[in-house]
Image (cartoon, rainbow, N blue to C red; front, side):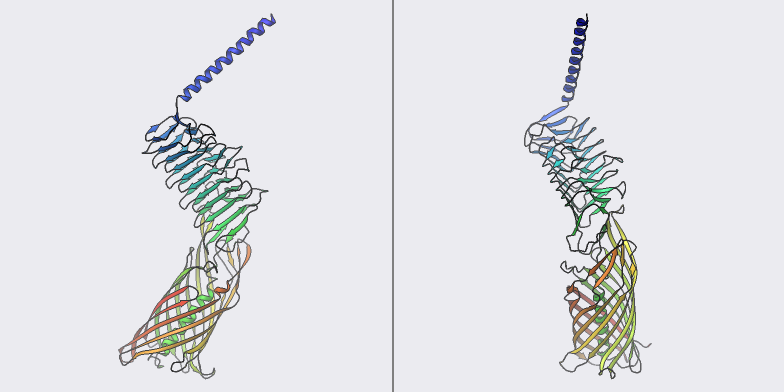
Length: 603
């Protein structure tokens, strides 16, 4: 009896399994009825709702003319298996590949090249699944979109995606606001995934909206960013995570990162490189063992990772020198004018445009300078009283500018019998400065922030000149000193007080071309040799971490040659107007052009 019951029970189990297998077979038949095998090159230019299955090597699928592959379920396009090689998928602008489930495009371990100018998307996860892959290439062109509501480009959890190349000029992003929300994750739980190379070009955007890192690398991989990489959920979340060893991240040009940069605990050989340009200010919140390097030679301060163009600090001695040259030229024009008669004051208005080129070897920052000013002189009994007013803009190449206003006063004595009958002067002044620099930073949602500063510089200048006759040039010297007290910027940077000095020796001569009752014309040249003296180091701090910058020796010495043409014309008895044009060329890659207009006045 028991044997009979056992036989009946076994038959029922076998019948149940047979029905189950038949149902599964019929289901697969239904599914496969919505699949198309692709064994040769194929162009899709309209709506296609069937799964595209590549069954041969070297197949090129092109989706164009607003065509689309729209799959209900997983895997809109896939290779047959890991043996399928040379698959190329090209999606033109306006065309798309979408699915309602995960794995819109699945490489299945085979060789796969994707060139996208349209849209690749899923409303679940894995717009592109790099399943067990080695050597996949993805190019997302400008206007191209790769998106998902989950991990967008994902290597499989067990083997990652070795030797994957991604070049992005469009958008790659995840809309998931919770976990499993990376835009690109080529390591997942596996830290041995190697050889990944990601390049995010200028204009390219890679971002996510969730808790996970925007980009996750495995080992021995590179990431180069000139566009934007953002964790839009929070700046305290990770934008870039390095899970394994020997990865290199390079942040270039004006590219921005929002969110932390982290090397996983226990990893080694990871590098963070900066290539933002000479003088660019940046501050990044980083963690983990990362070797920092600035490819432009800027000084990197490791508290997190920061650098700042010395800018206004670096050029104090140069600005002091140009001010000295302006003063000497003013006194020379006055002395060589027919108005040098101690019968009332003399004044001039001037404007100067100056450009200094960048020098990557000495870290000299490029800047343009434009200023406007007035020089006034009034004769006293045995000397001349001098007043100088100037305002200007020093505009550096890497989004840093300083506006300033200066007032100075002093005494000029011609043929000073108390100082070897030399032509002498002494002046002192104060310059009020307002600085504003743009800082690239991953601690702000915009990826950058303005840092403002207000500070003062005090200076004293003394000079003496021996006026020679005939063809022998005049010879003179100028000594100047500048003091900038300690000040803080509104973000990240603090500067300690600095004392800078200059010592200049110069030759100059004047040639009279025309001199009559109506007008006067003369030419003047000056050769100036300047050397900075005093403090050549600037102590500063970035977010509380102190550093010292030492000015390059090439920046402390300068040879300049200036020439001017001065023209005066009578307008009525004992009064004149005049103009002057001049240029300056220096060994600091500096070119300056300027002009003056003067008028004899009584005051």
